[in-house]
Image 1 (cartoon, rainbow, N blue to C red):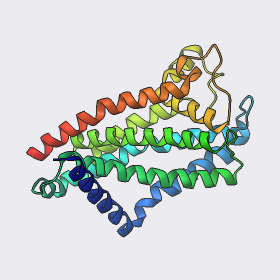
Image 2: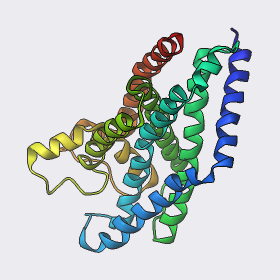
Image 3: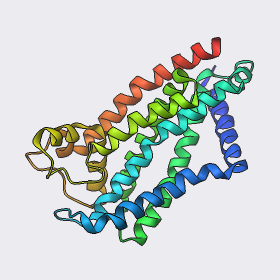
Image 4: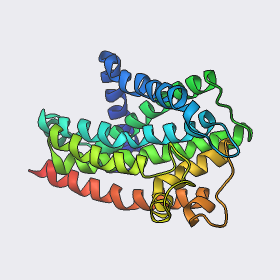
Length: 265
């Protein structure tokens, strides 16, 4: 099957997911109300109790909230893929002359579209509570580009989990166990300076810390790491891009292989 056929199949499946979203707008609640709640709870309620050297906490927080929402793509995509396997949609796709890869590409791209909506919503709420970008529009766009790349990689990881787990209960448990430590054992919500040495080192080598630090640098919300920081915090932009590329290189072929096995049963 050629490239044009693949693009046509992906477009058709992307449109299917978007039409499904239009029919069930309640799905938008998870990508609009949840980030707003996080911004309000952490930014307004906790903001007065946490100090950040060289910055205010609300500005410091926003990159962490953006990154956390990209991580939730794991659960969103995994639930969608597991649901398609369970309700017979995959069986119908298998009977059609279409690319097997297009099914997952269409699913992951549609979930990234939801991530774009979440980013816009959070940016508006962040602006209302005082968050600003200070490095210019091109660097801000680069920051959001890194976030969406992370969201796309997490969607593919979610597709792999959904194909292997095959049930909503298992998917929810796996996604929770994955996202929670990645989020809270990082620099997403708190400065790492006050942590014990071993815990600070663990948090700095968390890949999420590199993405958060890269976004803060590109948004102009704080400085990069000092000479005492681990490499992911000192050089967050190239290392976060490298980590996302590595994750995609692993999970995309693994998910496509798992889908082919699932569709062949």
